[in-house]
Length: 189
Image (cartoon, rainbow, N blue to C red; front, side, top):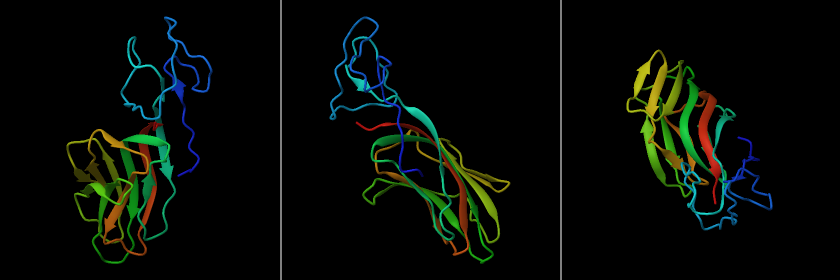
């Protein structure tokens, strides 16, 4: 993942956050938001609501580089952002080494605590390629080398949290690739 992440930051009045003057349509002046204030990703600005600047959430597709052979992938939330993960997809091609692999999707909190762990519905055996998809779903399924895994909804991740794979039984020749995350990203105040 590219370490330099650019976020679109706008005031509720629609001007760039760096603009010196912010007004509502009825002429109300906005004061800068304090660092201690919190922002909900579903919050909208309405007349009479709290004053301040808000980061508008941006839908992003994040593609990760394939990790080295035999290793799992991970995607940390940048220190300046929060994510709501909508979907994840990744492909695992296993080597010819005979062993069962059980991929998991895990969420950690930035302090080495696992807060969510969902294993695959099925084992992946040697010399196969499966596509794993995870999102807000009430079912898990396996069909035609595609595995669907359930993520909690909404999956809101704070700065420095990580979403990753953890493959039980991974072998030295196994390769994760085509790793894509669909997230809603906004500034962490």
